[in-house]
Every structure is written in structure tokens, then in C-alpha cells.
Image 1 (spheres, rainbow, N blue to C red):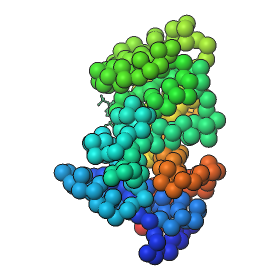
Image 2: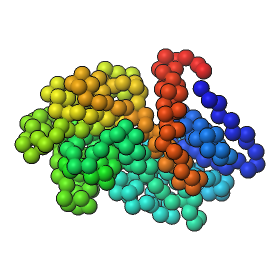
Image 3: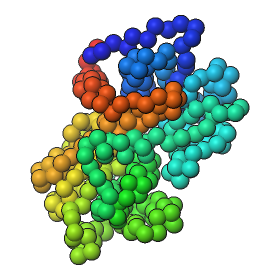
Image 4: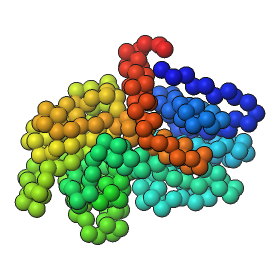
Length: 307
Ligand code: ATR
């Protein structure tokens, strides 16, 4: 595993993660490796921000001339009110995860969406003209839906336990993409019959798993248990990266499909944030160096081993 070799001095620029809690985040490791790889004098720290102190943390970041921040739960929406401007995609997704100084505060961006699109391209998955089924309608699903539509998915079916959340998500995007079909159904509805309709028979479905079901320590669980669903798909993406192979992925593969976890989405959202802060371009190939090292960190965290 490569060491993070930033030599901290008075020119070192500050970046970090604002959230609550931030203890288990892989972002400090990821950003440290990026800074080292790109030769940029930057440190990235976790800032556990207590409820009620977000505004002060933002103002502190400006006062300390931070190069930028990532924002995670529970502040991705709340942070918007303190910003100079919000990027149009972040506004549509309804979540900001990256801040860069602008005027007397920060500009807000969402890098989860480009991170997802870059992961698709890296894995050779082209959603253009395809039928895509998403499971989940929470935070991750917002960025995924925006990415799928931007990349040209023909129709998107959103399945969620709470159908009203799926409908609210769909509604925010329908008017911007009037030529696409965006349908919603509950997990208890007969979505199999819907997916088998002749209008979708041109190719198998691409499935994107955006719920927290199956995340460690809930390994072995999946929101969709019906084998028929997996037989209708040829590619599966899970936003979960711990465990590295989820039950959802296993079931996709058991039916002959290709399946990917969410680690590359995490890595590429980090690449995009780093690029925004430092005005550089990180080549995608660096992800292949990071993946085994980050998988190893996750494995050690699961087993309680110390490095
Ligand atoms: P994130 O930001 O990681 O997407 P979230 O906003 O809490 O997390 O969203 C979690 C998603 O997982 C939601 O779609 C949620 O469904 P509901 O909208 O019905 O709450 C889904 N989810 C969580 N637990 C679930 C379960 N046991 N079965 C099915 N779906 C579940």
C-alpha cells in the first residue's frame, strides 16, 4: 500500500469532509492518495460537525482559506442556504457534496452524479437508449437518476419501498426530460409484468441498486428477492461497496450478468471534487491503483484488523 507522502508546511492547503459522523469515511485516504499522486500540497481532514454548527464551520473554512470541502450526511441539503451559488445539477439533485471558495462563501457542486457516470464509462457500461430499473429513492438515487438521464437512458423504472418518495424523485426530473419514460412502482407491486412488457423487449434491463439493504453488516440481504427480476437484467450496479460483492451482485452474476459495486463511484466522485478544488485533471487509470488498496482497508475494517 502506497504511503501518503505529503510533507506539511505553511503552504499546505486545507480540505476536508463536513458531516456527522465522519469517522468511517474513506475520503481522507482517497484525497491523501490523490494529493500525493498529483503532487499537490493539500491535506484533507474529517470535520465532525455537531448539529447546529454547520454555518460556523463554513465561515471558519472561508476564514482559514480552505481549498474546499466535501459535505456528507446529514448536511448535503442544509448547506445550500450558506452558499454563494449552487451548480444547476446539484440544485436538480437537491444535494451539494463539494464546496469551492467563491465570493464571501463557497460555490456548491454535486460530484456524486459525474462520479457515477465516470464509473459507468470506466466499466464500459453504456446506458444510452437502454431501459434501466433503479431500486431506491434516497440520496444516492437522486444522483443516479440525474446521471442516467444525462447519459441518455431511454426509460427508467424507479422501485421503492415507499412509492411516494419514488414519485417525488421522478417528478423533479420529468419536465427536464420530456422524451424519456420515468415510471415508479412500489416493491410490493407487480414490477416483473411491467418489465416484461413488449415496449421494453428490445434489450435486457440494467439494474442499479440504490438502497442501503445489503450493506455490511447486513451482508446477504437484498431489497429484491425475486429471481425473475435478475433474469431480466444483464448488468447490475450496486452503490454499496462494503461488502465488495453484495447479495444483489451475486444474484445478477448467477443469472449470467455483469455486476459492479459502488467503490468506483466513490473514487470518481472524489476525483471530481479534487479536480474542482485544484483545477487539474486526474486520469481515470489511477482508480485501478486505488481499488485494491481501498478494498483492503474495507476488509480490515470489517475484520477489526489494524494496519
Ligand atoms: P442514501 O442517502 O444512502 O440513499 P437514504 O436517503 O436513507 O440513504 O435512502 C435509503 C433508501 O433505501 C431508500 O430508498 C429506502 O426506502 P424508503 O424510501 O422506503 O425508506 C431504502 N431502504 C432502506 N431500508 C430498506 C428496506 N429494509 N427495504 C427496502 N428499502 C429500504
